[in-house]
Length: 355
Image (cartoon, rainbow, N blue to C red; front, side, top):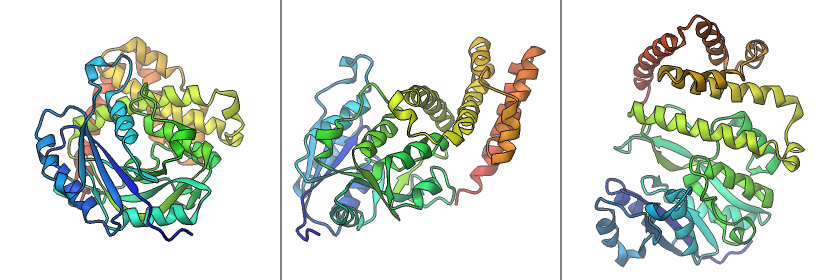
């Protein structure tokens, strides 16, 4: 193991982060690992992000403005563009990509560097996380809980990661990612044509290059918007829509199929169907019935038995059945609106369990 402290580049893409960026930078500056460069790339914020960050320039925080403007991009994500720009500025042996609204344990950098030094065959490392609200209070809920099959391994190979991503909506926490800088040579940058699944797509490329490391300690505090119901539902809608498209295309690739657990194929299909039923509900609710019916074609009656067998997606499968029946009688939109009201009631109950 190399005892010399290598330079770590802390890369922070930011946009309109005036409410949180000071707290984030303070947590990074309070690390017990001191050989770091802190690079923040501002994606043309319209608030006071720039002026706040510049107050930290004397403390080894380097402010940059992303030279690419969102209006200059065609069919690409300005968020991902900013990720790639801030990474391009890094000079360290390791690169950490941290969020501008999160808080970091004082030991996270030290522990991640040590992990990579002790495991030379690992190309990147993540940690576990707490969830916090806008006031830094820790939430008790398990939104974003890392799947068991990932938590049970401190070294994750490509096969395990791929099958876990297909099986679960949750995955490794992106704002805890630290990579070897040499990964950029073999893996490349984030895909600018992806937005909602750019992290998953990048994890898979990383894992095909070298195994991924995981430190099962909560060394990161992820700021969640769980109190904003509309934001949660809209964000979930867009994520699921992009996720389905990405996974369905990805698993069709000939060299990928060999890495999929064949015994789980039907289960994978049921999970994708479950996500499509969520979208179906959204489209019926908004009277976009033709789109909803097209998505509902993925539903199969055999999935109901499979959901009981696996103890997963039982409610979704019955909802798919009810939408099939309701659509035949022309009342699918009414059902969708009723489900929305029930969802609102469940959300209010769920909120009481946050703390």
